[in-house]
Amino acid sequence: MAAAIPPNFGGDRELAADPETAGLATALGDLSALFLQNLFLQRQAAANDDARARIDAQAALVRQTLQASNASRTREANIRELQPVTRVPAAPYGAVENVANIRMNNIPVFTGGSADTIDVISWISRIFNLAESRELTFAATINLLIQGSSKGAANYISEMKEENKTLYQIVQQLEMRYGSLTTIEDARIKCNNMARKPDEHLSDFIDRLRLMAKMACRQEPTEALRQRAVDILVEGNIRRVLPTSVRAALEERIMNRSLMGLPALSPRDIERECLDLEARRKERKLELKQMVQGKRHHVNKATLDVDSATSSSDEAEEEEDDSEHPRDFLINEIKLQRQRYALKGKPIDDRKVMKYAFRNYNQKFFGKNQGKQYPYGARAAQGGPPNKCGAEGHMMRNMACALKDKPLVDKACAKCGTGLHSADDCPKVYQKDYKAPADAADKESLKKEPLNG
Image (tube, rainbow, N blue to C red; front, side, top):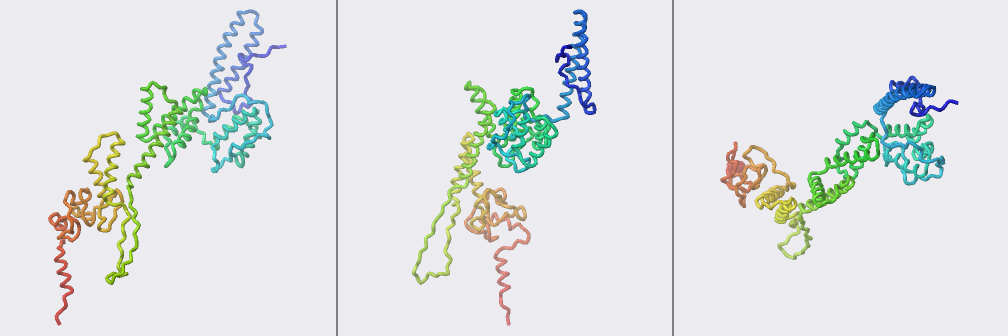
C-alpha cells in the first residue's frame, strides 16, 4: 500500500474544481503542488541517498514557487474581494447544533432597514459572542444569525444558506450590503476626513470613528497589531476635531503626567480625558452665557386708587420697564471683561476692559430713549451720506457713527432738531437741500395764514 503524500509535498493541496473561474496564480499553484507530489513518488522509488538528496533540493525550489503562488492568490483575493471587518474563527466554537432554546433578549433584531438601532458589524459581533458562549458549530451559528434577524436581512441570510455559502462568505456579504464595507485606503481617508455633526457628543463621534478605523485596519495579521493601529488612528483624529482650548488642556495634562514620572496615558485614558475636558468647557460656556445675560429686576407694580377731583381714569399709567437696567448691564459687562482675563491667565488691562465694556453698552442701549431698542451686539446701520449719522441721535465712540468722539449733550440739536450732538458738530448743515427748523416752521405758518377777503 502506497504511503500518503505529506503536506510538504503538496498532499494537502485542494486543486481547482472549476477551470473557468481559476486564475493564473491558482493554476500555477496547482501545477507546483502536482510537481511536488510527483517528486515525492520519485523520492520513494529512489535507489540511494544521493538521488533522494537531489530530489529534496528540487522540492525546496518548487515549494518557494508554491508559496509565491499562494501569496499572489491572497493579494488577488484582497484586491478583488473586500475582507470583512468581523474576524470569523478558523474553527467552530463547539459541537452544539441546537439553537432552539437560546434566548436573544439582549440582542436587537436586525432587519437591514433604516429603523435599526444597531449596525450590522456590532450585531454580528454580539451573535458571535453568544455562539461562542454556547459552543455552537458553524451551521448552528448561521441558524442563529437567521433567528436574530427579520424581514429582508433574514431572507438574505436564508438565501445564502441555501446556496451553501460558508460562514465567512455570509459575514462578508452582510457587511458589504448593510455595513458600507469599503477598501482599506478609502476607509483610512474617511477616518482622516470625518467631521463632527452639529451638536454631536464627543462619545458618539468616537464610536463612529472607531468603527471606521476597524474597517481601515482589518488586514493586520494579529489582533494586537490591529488594536494598536486602530488606537493610533482614533487618537490622532480625536485630537483633530477637539476645540483649541480642549486640545491645549489635553497636552498640558499629558505633559504634567510626564513631569511627575507617571506612565503615559493609554488610548482609552486619552478618550476619557477628552470627554472630561469637553464637559468642563461646556460648563464654562454656560456660566459665561449666564453672566452675559446679567441680573434682571422684575418689579410688581401695585395699584393705587386716588380719590381726587384732579385725577382722571383716562390718563395712561406709566409702566415700569422690567428689562435690564443700563447701569446694571454696564457693571456686569465690566465684571465679565475682567473674568475673561482671569480665565485666560493674563493680567487685566483696565483700558481694554473699559473699552469693550462701553462698546457693548453702547451697542445695546443705543437709541433706547428714542424708542429704538437695538439687539445685543448689533452695530448701528450707516444710512445715507458718509457724514450723516446712521440713525436718530448720536452714540459716542461708535465706529459706525459719523460723530465719533464728539461730546454728548442733553438736548436736541438746534440746527437739525434731532440727535444729542451740539449744533457746532451737526453734519446736516453741510448736506444738500439743508433747511433749518425755523425756516420750515415759517413756511408752514405761511401756508396756514388766511387770505384777505
